[in-house]
Length: 293
Image 1 (cartoon, rainbow, N blue to C red):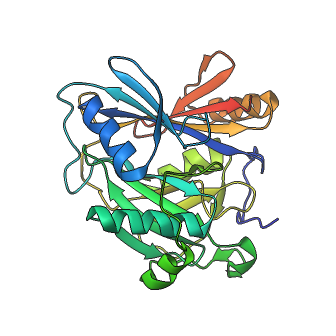
Image 2: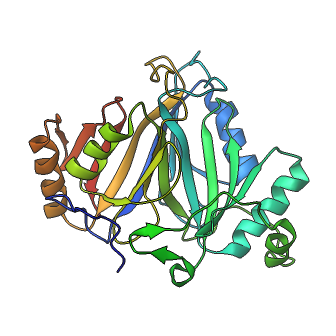
């Protein structure tokens, strides 16, 4: 197992963690459901008048929760402190190629990048919230120099990725799709490190990205990204389209208790809810730590 951290925190999140659902506040539920179903291919698992849970086509696990707040202000072009993007991790490269072919047929605008450790497509939902959909390259192919992981934002080899899709059409994210990471706009990288590394217990991934820092558990390239690329912008307000909450699922309740104790020792307020621990980072972004069920 690769360990990125030079100076590990007193508490370390376990290697078996996964990320759970992201909760988003949006302005128009019907419009957002149409986007996530038609463009990305998520399936509505259930809905009420103001909320919906969405997941992969053959899986009942929730990936995205939509919470409508009529009139919520869209994200401005420059962004706000809060969500930069949440990232949907597909189980294989062929699925990513099928999604790219689908988006091309729709004529939808899509950003693309080869990050060396992964290949990624970038979208924006109707409220301006950022979405990454990506597939990892095998970890054995990741290039590591000491504690530094090689990542980049190189051009994507589109013909090669489309060829990987074969003749199979995109019918939505397949079983095994999950939330791979969240990436946040923050005001200060040192404060982000104090919260996500020292208090919460992620390892620090040492990368040479100007204005950004990345955190993970178990040697993954990152479960959390933070950047100061929207420095000077206000934090997302209660009336804005925004990330309401994201979830870390740890293997055991003892891991929840360890994270809660570490956060409280770091001076952060921890709320308890049905066995879960919830805390807010310095920019008011809530994170839930929950034992796998």
